[in-house]
Amino acid sequence: MAEIQEILVVLDPGAEQHPALDKAARLAEGAGARLRLFCCDHDARLVARLFLSPDSLSAARADFLRRRRQWLETRAEPLRQRGLAVDVEAVWDSPLHAGILTEVGLCRPDLVVKDTAWHPPLRRGLLTSADWHLVHTCPVPLLLVKSDPWPASPRIGAAVDPGHPGDPAGVLDRTILREAAALAARIGGIVSVVHAYLPVDPAVQAAVAGGMPASVEPAAAAEAMRAAATAAVDQLLASHPDAYGDARLLEGSAVDVLPAWCEQQAASVLVVGAISRSRLYEAVLGSTAERLLDRIPSDLLVVRARPA
Image (cartoon, rainbow, N blue to C red):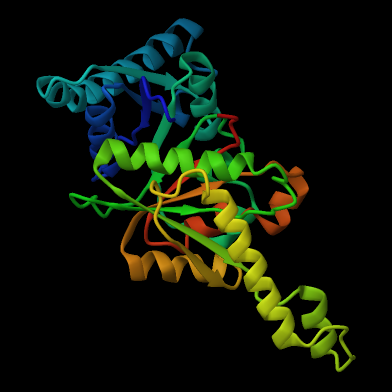
């Protein structure tokens, strides 16, 4: 997303509000990017029926999509009057995430923006949430937005995790910093770097909890963990000392402590990284990004590692 030329905005005709459209337009104005308003929908009544000929079904579906494109045009025209370049597309597809991913493959946007809502755990477990699938499979940066509008100078949280075994070279962390800075530059925001770390090594914690002697005192272990986390973040930011300011270290699991940090700091967007794991792992345990989505009050920008 560091270079934005086209933004794919996923819209739902059944929704009353479209915060994704407002925020994508602000981004497009700041980046000089083109907007592509996209609707993926279908009508179950127009699936193959014995009493309808193939030609009748085809005509009915074409009319359905024509009306969807007309609806998109009503959203596009005010943006064009503001000087933005906007085109529209409506496709017949289901499930929603499949249609979105197909469109991403065809038009290759630099960013996907989509409204999001709270997802019950059961729906996530059954893999029925489009957002769940997009978090894990969208190949370009994905901005999932909530209803609160961005203020004049939004705070952008960059959630880094130096030393993560899935990112030993730190490529993902540098991508997070780069994308957070790019987003802030385009919407007049401020970047705050945050790193959540476990204050005590899990092995030491388990030993103490089980009444077994640990090789290291918990207090000493906690101090060593904090020192290591501080050094790792300092090293990550060393090449950009003025770009991100001071980093905030949070003790605890990212899923537990980042939501409170976002609320306390009134963060408008939290930028997190996605690391590919097995599908079974994600289905059972979920990713940090997916678990944060329903806990933070902020919008969530999910990025994948991209070498500079």
